[in-house]
Length: 370
Image (cartoon, rainbow, N blue to C red; front, side, top):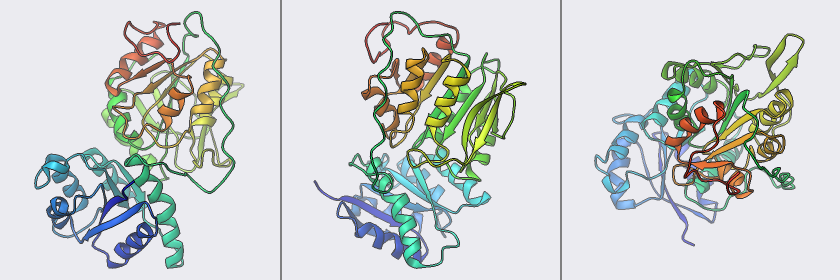
């Protein structure tokens, strides 16, 4: 198999060298060129024909957001308008805002630049751990996520069904790579009077989640907030897991509330989807509608098995509309999805299931008709 051809775009000599050295050390990746700003990068696309571009945000002449728009709009790079683009971002309010703008403009993913790291070797390790799995996922290559470890236990088989599942009392959604734009497509199409509370896990660091919740709140009729510990769960409000915290449903004497914890990462992630799904099954006695959107890895698969076993419903995004069909694909391939749908049909599916309506004719069912 030919190596993945990557172009590195950054105005910092140091960052270009770190990224180039890290990528060149991987036998599956070849750095075919670099550029010091977006204008030069767009001009080099036809000559270098990369399979993927890493893009800094703040650069002279043409910044990273402008370059993404130029590539996606075809200006100077029509043949490459679908090339995967990974943004390099700082873990700051400004960096988070700019990264979300870049994702809205058509970038596929982002990594955060090492901050306050004591040595070049630590910076390289940080880039290696974040960037290489995302490059391989976005170009369809096999990846190993995280350090070598025993594989997670296989999911429990879904309970056989002869009729519809329990009518959902809560909506839980998990996503990762490509998830910000997928959520920005789904949530605005849900009504403000949605009859259940919503809990969201998007793999994202601190600072980013607060800004992302604010953006979703502006886009959507629903109220969207970054989750806090101990908020009551009420219909029509969506709680987004904050970076570096698991979000769970907690039963209290005053009813069901959000809970945050910094338990160990699961599936190499915190926040992770599985803890949310497990807690929702317990708190709502299986009356759960789970939706899993685009993302790398398999986070959510084991939680989806528990939801199905308890009588809940699982809907996943299909491969054709996913940026990376890792998380939804793992659930579909395990036979745990009630429906496998393109992104634009998921809002309707959510509304149907919340109304207690079984899948419409023509829906793609994982296990055949119920």
